[in-house]
Length: 126
Ligand code: SF4
Image (cartoon, rainbow, N blue to C red; front, side, top):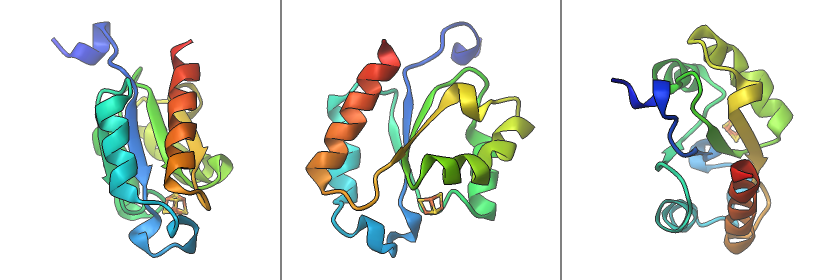
């Protein structure tokens, strides 16, 4: 039985790191953020993708996304994220608006980003 069909898992945290070259993430310690999220927060697991808004990001979502699963995605402006990969989710029966909470974590220090993820997860659990 697919666990996601009858018993949706906790949110999956996906961090889009914008190739690692984006000035907007220069103050963010990526691995500290991801490890704090996966070890201390109520998520199924945490992963990093280098660039969700290009072809392999689209292929990632088509391969990875499941209907009903919640995703918390750290990256850029939520409107940009929606525009860039909502169609990839739709193609596999998932729904950006219902399943994705997109967070803008650019230009944040690591602790502030960790706090924002934690607060958002708490809101998602309400
Ligand atoms: S989705 Fe946003 S954060 Fe991710 S690579 Fe594209 S512009 Fe950067």
